[in-house]
Length: 275
Image 1 (cartoon, helix red, strand yellow):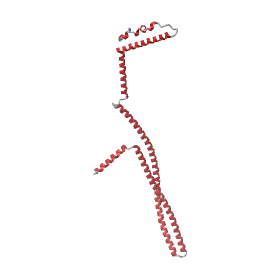
Image 2 (image 1 turned 120 degrees about the horizontal axis):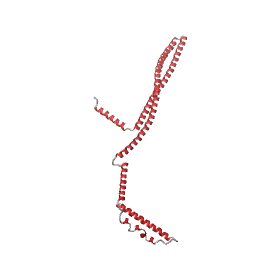
Image 3 (image 1 turned 135 degrees about the horizontal axis):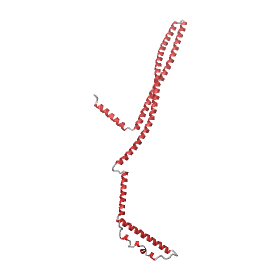
Image 4 (image 1 turned 90 degrees about the vertical axis):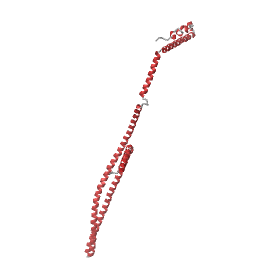
């Protein structure tokens, strides 16, 4: 039966990981992915370097073993020649000693040649391993370059996504402002202004068509007529003051008589015009 504490711990860790993943910054995650890829490439390069180093060491060891074989072969020949020379000189004991030495060199030669064969096998294997390691490093370097290029692309897409989110947030805020009843929108303000303008026009129209409005028109007309009469008086006085001009008519001196509109005989001043 599974341990309930272990299950609870695993659940909490999974929940914690999911929360971290949910709130993680994509830019940081991209950089982490690139850093991991770079570390993997570095480790792979170090492993490949170790494989190539082993192959080089086997090459040097094989070279030394071949040189030792040549030396042992030379020593074996030298011992056989010396044995033959001693036997030719009648020294059989000496010849036997040289032959024993030649046999010892021959035994060393057999061992050295066997070592060379073993080293050759290892060297061939190391050559294949080194070639595979080189290809692995090259392929991983290409993948790393692709990831770096993908990082640039993802960062650009991330910036575009952020800008789009800002635009969407602005649009949502405008929509929320329009939907918010406590904040008047432009249409409501326009309706309010148009209503006030229409009310003002209606009030003005009523004022113009009322009795007070007609009276005001009559009074305004009387003032305009009085102003016109006064202007004629000034013009007449200017003509009379000019040299060589005849004296102004006596009627001009009495504007009330010349302009009955200024007197109380004007029915417009006494009563309002019927509508």
